[in-house]
Length: 235
Ligand code: NAD
Ligand code: APR
Image: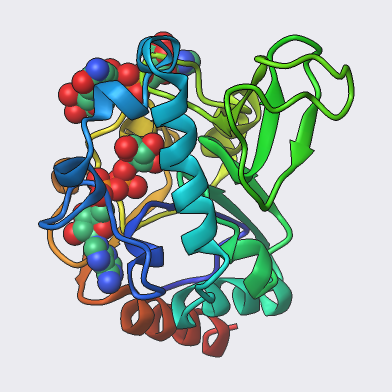
């Protein structure tokens, strides 16, 4: 695999699937059970905030019951022992990378265990339930709290920092993402355009699979562990 100085890892729902969190677009996925336009758009939230809070309250409760799997743990080990820089950019709103020990981490689609007050701008950690009329702990006003997640049509977080890292990385790895949601689905082109070697780890080819140099298909728990072992042994 060679020796890389800057590794950029993009993760999607697939890395958390074996922890028991359903993905979005696989059979039985979240978007089969829920209408994306109702629970994951700003318009849906304005139409029916009770339903949107109920959806995220449920996902928050489920998240507290699951654990990081060997794929999350292997990435944390890579960051700890690899002599070069390892950055993990995740589309996931779960906290399984942090719990596994990853520190150099960007949540581009927000975090499920945080809420945001649209009236005062504060962001808080929240592990319990939020309702439409729950008052904000900082400003005390009711009606302004929303999940700290990026909905369709909204701007993902930390994009400037992410594009800087994409241009500088020499290895780009996408793990467990369907490659359908932009801008994340386009990151491989930016990295490749800057000369990075691009590896896809997934159960099956993503929509953008043709843009990668190498593919490793199988469960993330196995494939990520194997890949990390190779990189660390090659040091
Ligand atoms: P998206 O709706 O999630 O929007 C991405 C956001 O990122 C947009 O706000 C855009 O302005 C911003 N963005 C995109 N490229 C950027 C860049 N280079 N720099 C900075 N900001 C950038 O994404 P999408 O591509 O429109 O949709 C992805 C998938 O989601 C598609 O499969 C689509 O069918 C589905 N979708 C469904 C709905 C819906 O049903 N309401 C809405 C949007 C998307
Ligand atoms: N190991 C590896 N890959 C897996 C596994 C597994 N055990 N299980 C599923 N996958 C793969 C699937 O083959 C699929 O390519 O994970 C991918 C999951 O794709 P999506 O459900 O589309 O998830 P993701 O790409 O993260 O979605 C992007 O869409 O709805 C929005 O904001 C949400 O961040 C999310 C974004």
